[in-house]
Length: 245
Image (cartoon, rainbow, N blue to C red):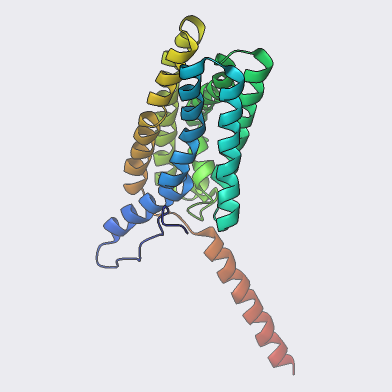
């Protein structure tokens, strides 16, 4: 853990509801990268639009954004920090850089991320409507419940469904604003609006997720169940061997 990350708080047996909220908050903070992950996600795009605003040169803007994305990953590797968010960020930036250089248009830098985000909005919405909420698939391993919420914890399934629908609506609303700008606005306008809309929708979606999950039943720790079953099986085999001696 770095100073930018939060660890799970110790349990509070005197107030299980407060403990559930705190654990949910810590898990969400970790799952979505925390403050540092958010900064790393925003920095390459911010650098791109700043440089392009000044010199209107797609190539230098794209190269600078790609370089800083790679640098962020290298820093994490040197510090032996978690790199999953940094790697996902550098991949997204890399695709944007490739599009920008290939098309020669600054808008090309933003297009892959916009398509991906709009696709996520559709996926979150559809998954909620068909009863297999995507957010449960994403967060299940974080809470060590995997997919147990689908059949064993209907309260959490309902919470995941509401949260996934919230993510879908928020994402679709965001890109309903951005795509008209992509088609009819200029690249500089699009870039700054994209930066402005980077954080608030994410914060809102995470907040709704926290509200729904904090009120839901606690997750079923299937990993602990498996370990307990394995330990009981080993103990039974050991007892059987002793009786056979």
